[in-house]
Length: 193
Image 1 (spheres, helix red, strand yellow):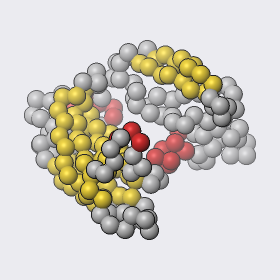
Image 2: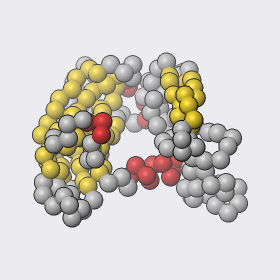
Image 3: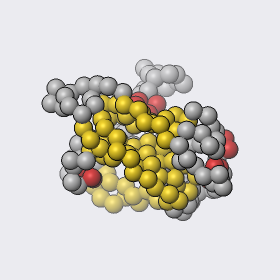
Image 4: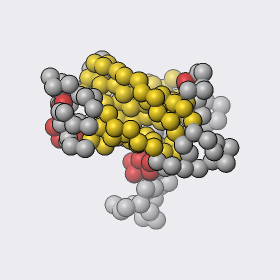
């Protein structure tokens, strides 16, 4: 934006990233993992897609593991299953999963956490290839959210001029938006905590 007005721009007139900019950064990541319910609710099938940008150094199929976890809003993992899932860069890859959500599961207080990692990577925190996504089995308006008490603590100033923050919540908080009265942008924003 060239003036401080509401618009479809992803960067405001002060150079700060709007939430759209953070969402686009995720949508255009080198590896994208996503889930689509064939029908929302119990007994439906979850179609999971994985795609990576074409890469001349990665022409062959890359064996990996897809972890599918049903998680409560309190952070407890209700169930978790691993599935072999091969990534072929430049080609969408699909797997259809059944019985991800049990019949007695409270859909308004659970979500599905998807994560994919390259099997050849030993230290999963430093893998070059990897992706994660959250899938809800209900519409966002039906999620049983509680009032969150969110705390932000400045941990330290980094050598590159950035600031490291620790953000915590006593309960699940959806789409947390951070704001600051200073120049610069947050590395992530509009995230679930």
